[in-house]
Length: 207
Image 1 (tube, rainbow, N blue to C red):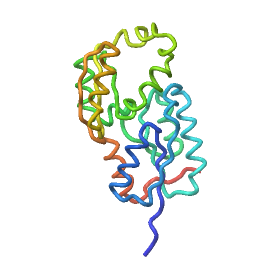
Image 2: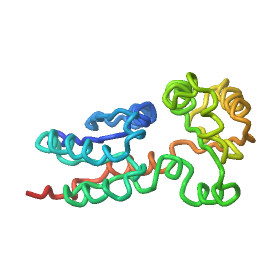
Image 3: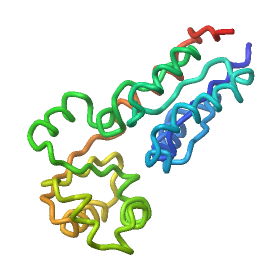
Image 4: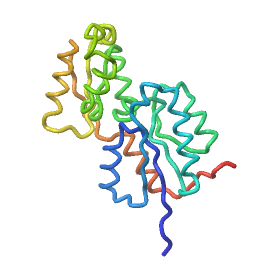
C-alpha cells in the first residue's frame, strides 16, 4: 500500500490550538502544521510575505499546502500571493467570520456595527495582545480612544471552558460594553480542513 502523501497547513498562530484539536480528533497523522506569529495581525501588511516565504521554504516537502488565514486586513494582497503560488486559503475575511459562518457574522454585524469580537484565543491572551499590546496598561486614557466607538462585545466561543464566559463578561465590563455570547464551534475552519485533509491533491505547483 502506498504511503499517504504529507500535506501542510500554514496557519495563523491564533488558530494553533483549534487546528491541533481537529488534527487529534480526526487522526490526521499526515497533516503537518506551521503557525506564524499571531502578532502579525498588528502588522497585516507583512502577512502575505510571511506566508509566501513559508510556501517557498516547504513546497518541495509536501504534496499540497493550504493556508489557514482569512484576508485578515491584508487588503487582498494575501489572495494575490496565493493566486501566484497556486495555493488556496480558508474562505472569509477573518476568523470571526469563518468561525461564526458568514450568515451569522453578517447578522451580528448588522445588529450592532460597533461590536468588538473575542475568540477563545483572544480571550486567553487579551491582556497581552490588547491591554499591553496597545499600551493601555501604561496609558489608561487610550482605552477610550480604542474602544470609544464600540457598544457591544460578542464572545464567539469555539470550545469554551467553564470559566470562559465569566472572563469574557469581565472584559466587557472593563471596557464598558454590552455582552453577548455566541457558540460557534470550529465552523468554517473545521469544514475547510476536513476537505483539505480528505481530498486528493488537485493543485499543480507553478514554476
